[in-house]
Length: 353
View 1 (cartoon, rainbow, N blue to C red):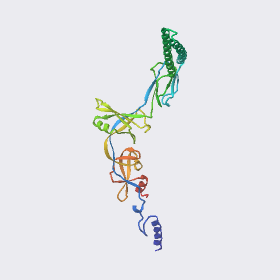
View 2 (cartoon, rainbow, N blue to C red):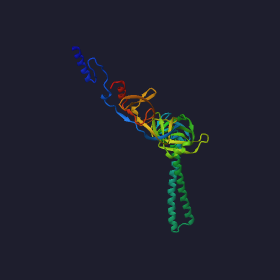
View 3 (tube, rainbow, N blue to C red):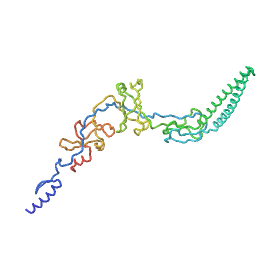
């Protein structure tokens, strides 16, 4: 009898910890109702774009090859391949001895032309006053008028020459038209170049677009809706603009299209292949929070709650990810509940509460 009371006292202590029993009885886990409820969400279908997947290639909107605009020898190269160049920066310099000498000659001619023009204008004014008083013949006045007009014309020509010479000096400094990255350097220091010689190639990684082809069977829907998205891994980025070329390729019956991307949306590089989703309508989708999806190796799963709050692991096939939501293509149906905290759900399945 004393031994049985001792066991009863122990069982009483175990009951306070959520266990049940009696002297000689069976110990087991507490019923599920005694456990705290799991945070869950009920799945409801949502209207989402119906997309047709195609392949696409990333390209830079701003890409150019800088060429020489004057004769000269390469004196200095400031940037090389893969260097980031700010807009307006000098990327290459040519020796400018000849151009600066031409500028000095043009400026001297301009100074002379200005003096000759001032002299001719003053002489014309004197002869005009004398002609008004009939002190000189009309032939002399006409000659002074011609001299004035000729001096003004020579001044205009000298100004144009000085402007051209100044531009020639400026052409010895090759500047970046926009910020970007150098992709090719086509000359070396000491090489002689002439107008039109390619010097350096670069592109901007800020403004990108996707080149793709639209099948003839869906081109009308794409033109009408003008919506598309680009997928890189699980990331989805909506195109800001769609341009479809007016004629189809004869061999493939597809229309070339360009999809502009928002600046700096994702980490992309020209030449990369991406998946493109062309919107052709709407459909129902099941979306779940990305944090509720468990990745185990190459498979994905979620924890599903039944009517009695029982928890079970369900393997699913995820689709594209948009923000913090993941599309579930297979494995779930509308109306089911899934656990929002997979760690807590896993403890419940393992019996850890």
